[in-house]
Image 1 (tube, rainbow, N blue to C red):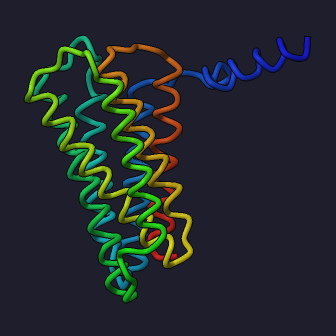
Image 2 (image 1 turned 45 degrees about the vertical axis):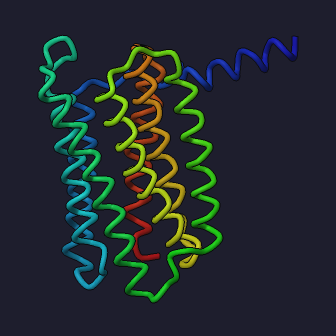
Length: 219
């Protein structure tokens, strides 16, 4: 009886049965709220070295959200899909630049234990990704794009972890959640998984991750 209860509770946690599936317009509302928050930080703390690039990163991610959520999936042209993916990738690069500026402004060393732990994590991440796509009939172009995307988001993750270690910041949690949301999207894309609970996890981790990244950019 206890085991069955634990299994049921675990299944409810994984599938997020108590959380409703939000609409595309709600997703866009959340995204624009985050963009407004990034803008307010930029206006209130213009002296922080990272605020401009963090605002740019959030603007790019909001553009990606518009491209991916403005139309239903069945009506969305491939051009919007590629534009959205490209916007997210450049957004990750902007976040990395923002945190590099923080590292430079505080005279922190880029390579530290936080950096090495993050690199080790990304190596494991790459191994898992390689196992996931093994045997899948993906075009060389798709594999190249997929690999480059992982490289960019990995660089962002490692950079934020580097800063977090030196500054004793919680920003690495946001970077990890952001990375996890991208990984879930990758699984959906490669395996054509259309599960409501995966969408729920993306829209828990993605906005929460960016919120932490924005809040902890100078702490």
